Length: 280
Image 1 (cartoon, rainbow, N blue to C red):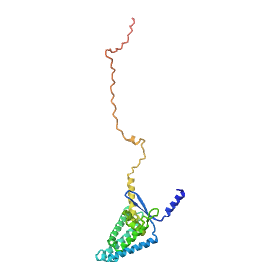
Image 2: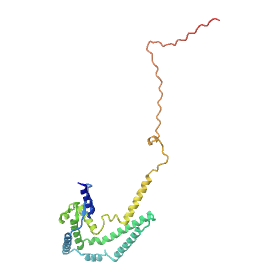
Image 3: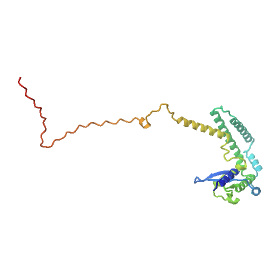
């Protein structure tokens, strides 16, 4: 491939406004998928899918959202106390978010951590309160029809890298054996339709603050483990600096005397002859 073709492909990738998401397989393989804008025909068919499922749900006796809400009020699941509690948590969450986002740099680490944990707690409490209503509401005519429309849009907008559709038909998506892929694709499309990023939970203010605090603590712990280097460096190598045990000195062995052959007499040193003295 020539340089001109490489540049052309690079420009295409930059100008590609499709949204990308990945899926890791059990074999640790990373699969790449893309979300493209739906065509007008896809939107019309998605609306038709919504109407078909809604009408069928009415015929099957499924409650509408208003009917379900009346039932929840009748059973005491939704009450004045619940509504007031929900509103209180919402206001508290907004106030804590404002406080966290406007903490000065001079604030201590403990103050930032306490504020971030409180935001996380309130967000979880709000989610639990909403689930008391969202759970039953998911089984209403409107929600079942909306789910079907989302499924249809997912089957039409999810593509491979070469811009071919991951599923040729809506039925192929519904019959997808890879459940993880079907759920991941649907979730990504829902976030895309709501204008949210895939990692919107990780980018929440409280999560960003907690990650920063954790990173600073980790860096501090690593720094504490570093042994400071002294100014005076010994000329001896580390191996030489280790004291070696003294090796025991070898004991001196007595010298062996030479044996003379059997039958031989020992040599006697001759005495020097003395000269006779002259008579005076």
